[in-house]
Length: 265
Length: 261
Image (tube, rainbow over all chains, first blue to last red; front, side, top):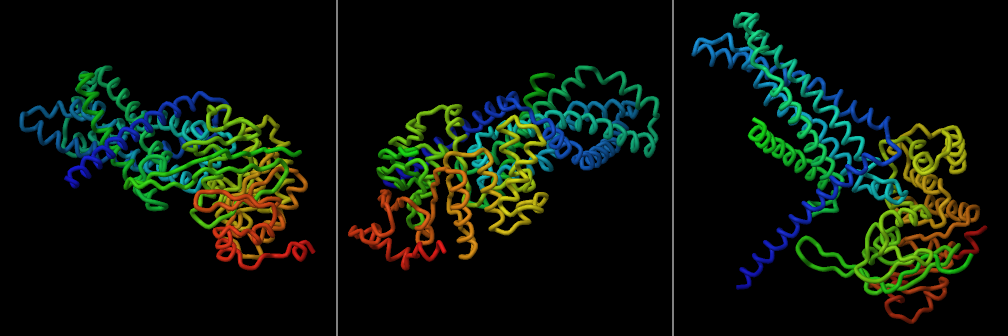
């Protein structure tokens, strides 16, 4: 009997923590959004964050896109040549990149590169009382710390996605046309006919939604460290919360990728 | 000048840890701090000293009881009013809490840049003057991690004093410093306080060293606070808890006369 009661107690406590956590993240999102519209606006901080999140991700996005496009060229050729329609390679590569792989892989790479960094930075600021210090100076930490990261991610992720698409398509061109000998005219004209505005819009909407997911989860987990259910202390708590943020953000990106595709098909 | 500026009225606070055990840290704390005075809040580790500071700053709310700052209860305030009250405070945190991705200059200038509308050259003038006052000239382009512990404390103090606070809170200001450096820091506190006339609240476990600074000592023990007006009162107290505390944590009491020479 005692054991059963104990289990029920643990279940109840975990449920409470779960909702407390969810509520905390919800409030965090609202506070961050209101922080964006508070004066004075930190323009220089925004530029710096765009550089850190966007420009510094350029190389990793470039290589991920190039190899993804090259693989798509080879795999697409292999599949399409079975049914004798190698000419459709251009549209196959472009559509899978623009609708799906561009936004998703960009979001995952940005989560790994910039999201983890944001989370760890805020987590360390929390445990070393730097966020408390801001509050004591009556400086709104949402405006000061979170708003520049939020806006910078919203600017950087869609641009990186577009870069990913362009580089990826040229990767596919390289293997498909230059290596495997698909007709370059067929490659590009097929692409031109099959890629519609609708497809490009879907990709852009996805990249904005993913940007919000990344910055919300990664900054939120770091900022709320010690405020929500503690996962340890000191350096260990920062490392755990960073891992947690990256995993949670990646899974949420994939989940919403499915939902958006299903909704907007 | 006189009159209570900070008052604790029957404050209770407890924490629930992850495994569900409840720890009662404050069990009905009552004391008041008068304007312009120096109060030392002492007590062994884990007796709620840091909690008291967080309560004063409104970073934490008590379970029951009131905390009055200049007669206004901060436990029921909305965040905007709380921010107004906080603008009276300067804080030196236990770990100093300097913004470690900003330079010394950036740290000290931040309150002026964010909370005042002063032009950039005026801010520059004030920051350089205050760095000179704290013996930090020439270090303005360094990052906090490149400074010694004592210098970090001085940067923290310079930052906290930029907006001329009415109340300065020091959370364990000498943690991690050797005895000579701690004395140097306390002398600096004393000197600056005489210039700026703020009310000072020092949370510390090394009470003996700062007796000559304190007008009042609040000893926290087992969730209660006991107030003493000078060191003799503490030593003469016949309360067994306080006698224990005196013997365990204080030992030899410094003579303030020797210190002043």
